[in-house]
Each structure stands twice: as structure tokens, then as C-alpha cells.
Length: 418
Image (cartoon, rainbow, N blue to C red):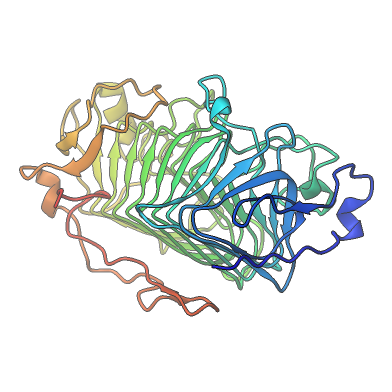
């Protein structure tokens, strides 16, 4: 496929005082190096070296095809600013990778911070990550950062960037079949949009804070079949803060959360956190060895229409089980919940995962298998009697429609291995 790249002069707004050169060097017919403004197609199987901040201009799009490796230069700590649209279209066999050179993928850098993140302000109408691997991001901003100069994210120096920030209440965001790992703080920070998060995996993230999925006002989201392992704080932080319309309404079903919340120095949640009049529905989720059950901010609680049912709780030790109990430490109760009273109650019977693994462990073993054994009591503990936002799908301008997956009667993200 012929490569199409458009290079434009960056806006003076962010270039003033910036020492980075505005160049695009095509090193071969396929591979290349990028800095400045980019759009068009990064073709299948290519390697793109990002040597400085890149911007997809408003009104333009960048499509990244399957098997592309996007190598970030740790000395430049690049940010990817999406003023237009971004479509990352990997496959299961050939995912797109946002990463750093192999020599930087060390234990010392296990929590990333080597490049910024993918930052999409209100001008971004569509962002898709399908079969992508996002790793080693979360660099801390400075006064010289493009994001600070453009007023993006929290618009201050000293902030560790999320891997993805999206901020368009009328926009469309789909993140599916992707892996987020080795990240410094929040994996995602979402401030509006029609949203699907499905079949993703999150692990080795967060040093002093940080959630896997952080939703604010303006979000209508379906969140399903995600595996979240040992985030520093919550798997999901749900809030209606920000005064955007519509009210945040997040539907969360068939997810598996393990060991979340324990590495945070101070206790604030540990699985799902509810606050500031967010409306949330939570069904069919497994909470295994999470620091708490679903928890609310007592001073700014969730919307009274919130529904919680058919979730499954397992704790290896008594302290964990005690922190699941509704009413304890502002833990929220539901209906038809499976919550035991004793350590070891309700073993979900994962195919291969030692349930006595330390709750402070942040390293992920690729041999673990969180499918349910055929004898698991969790296989018929869920419900399908609820409505999700995007049963009929979200259609992008490129003609691709993404549909939130059907719920399952089992609990958790993976069911039995086929």
C-alpha cells in the first residue's frame, strides 16, 4: 500500500519557544521517522520512529495498520496530540505497538514514564484503538511540554500523563482487544463521548496512584470483558465531575478485577470507585483479592438510579473478605451478589492462577489463565437482563461499526476456554 503522509507547519501556539525541529524523514519506502504534524496512513508492518511530539491536525486523520511498531524516543518523551482523528487498526495476530526500543524495556523502567500519551481534545471526533499494545508511557509534563502549551489534559507541569486522554462529549471512542502495561499512572482518563471499552487487559500500572479506566462527566460508556490486574488504585474510577452534559452513565459488565488497590499508599477504593452523582450499572463482575468491594465517596455519592447485581467476590484472606462487606468502609451493596463471610469462600476456579499470589505483586505472568474451569460455580451466576448503551453499535466515518458485546450468564471476563 502506498504511504500517504501530510506534513504541515505546527501552530505557533505550541511551537513558540520549542526547540524541537519540524521535520519528517522517510527513511525507506515503508519505515519512517516522524516529528511535527502527520496524517494519512502508516502502512502494515512498518516501524515508525517518533523522535518528538507529533500532531494529527484538526480535520485530518491518521490510520495505523496492523503490525505497525511505533517506537518512542525516551530522550524526547514524545506526546501524540490528536486534534483530528486516529484509527489504530491492529489484529490479534499483528497488533499495533506503541512502545520503546527493547533496550529500554527493563525492570528499572517497569512503570514507564518514557513517553507521554495519546491526547485527544474536543476537536478529535473519533479515536479507535483495536488490537493495540500501549506500554512504557506516562511521562511527566514540564512547562516546555506541547500538552501544557496547548492547554491539554490538566494543563499543568508536573502531571504524569495518561496513556489515553479523550475530551469530546460528542466524540466517539472505541478501545478493544488491547493491552495497557508498564504505565506510570492512569491508563485512561476520559472526559466525554460515546465509548466502548471491551476485551482489554491492564497490568503493571501506577506508581503512587492511577486507575485503569477513569471516566468523568459527559461519558456514556459500555465497559465489558476487561481484565484488570494490580492497578495501584482502582480498576474503574467513575465520576460525574466536570459539569459536562450528558451525565456520566457507565455500564460495566463481565469484567475480572484482581489484586487492585493494594499498592496505593493511602486507601481510596481498590476496585470500583463511585462519586459525584455518576450513574453506574455493574453486573457479572469478578472481584478477586481486590482491596475493597465497590466503594463510594460518602460526601459525594453516586446517582440513586445506580444498579449493582450478580457480582462475585473472592478473598484469599480474612482481611480482604471483611473489606468486601457492604457498609464496611463505605462499600456499596447490591442484589444477587455472591459475597462470602470467610477467607476462601467462592473460589471462582480460574484455570491457572495461584490465588495466594501476594496482593502487592504488580508483575504479570503471561502463563496465567483467567478462564473458568468447567466445574466453576461462577459459570451460571450472572445475568443478561439489562440493556447496554451501544447494542446497535457506534459507526465511524470510515464506515466501520463497533458494537458493545453481548453480556454472558457467567461472571468475569473470560468464561470457559473454548
